[in-house]
Length: 342
Image (cartoon, rainbow, N blue to C red):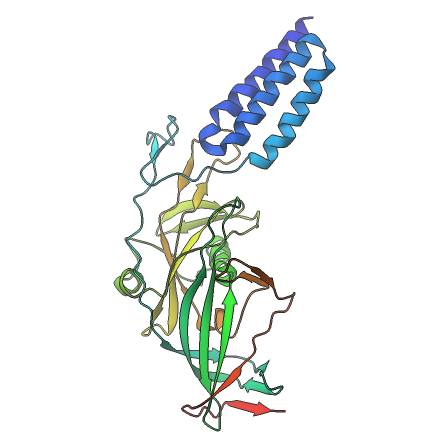
């Protein structure tokens, strides 16, 4: 009899822990807390209906257990972290301002790339550097009906072949390719090899990087969702962070840096997971906005396996998506490294 009531007390304790984690896990925490209360009822009465109800509530709670996206400046919880007091989210990043324009990007390839043309031929880019005129356009802003909104954008790319004929292609994509580079940066930072790509907070990023995003951005706030469960322990400008991308929706701003011959990206909206194992909100902080570089080869002449067009229709392009170049009939500056073959 005494053991039964001890178990009831333990179940109610787990219920309280889940209720207390509402600020971190939202409705899923409430459902799990209620499941433990109902389970305590089963332990006290032996009624099988309580057991079945508790299991059902717990399973449903799994689908609703998602990290709560907090607003900038919102205080999280009431506990102290390392004696610093309640955590307050960092201020929002500096405003991102887009400037619609065509840019010339020097695309450097280590290996030859061959892509089909609309008239059944092949356009081959030899190893080396090729000037590509590129224009970015936001194509679809996810309204957020899904748990994790993913936006889509398009890059129009124009080149001239060895004969001086102009070709262009439309490359629709999600931010997956940007996220791919960001993940590589996190891996390199966590490895601590000393050769990791730079990752700067807003206040320490080079002025040219910040100015490009706040005055001449090509894209602002495109969102992606990374399904990786990997946890990265890294240091950003001397401050330690623990990052896991699962269940998070990073937002990316993109601009072109001619002097760096690279794109610069700013990522925001991520959370630090230093104590994610705890069932409460303490120790879960929002990362400040961070800047990193994107090589042109990470975006140009590439696309993703799926995207959503401007009408909201999702398109699947298979496991190995391929771009198709179309002749415009106009003259272009010849590029001896781009040839056309049958």
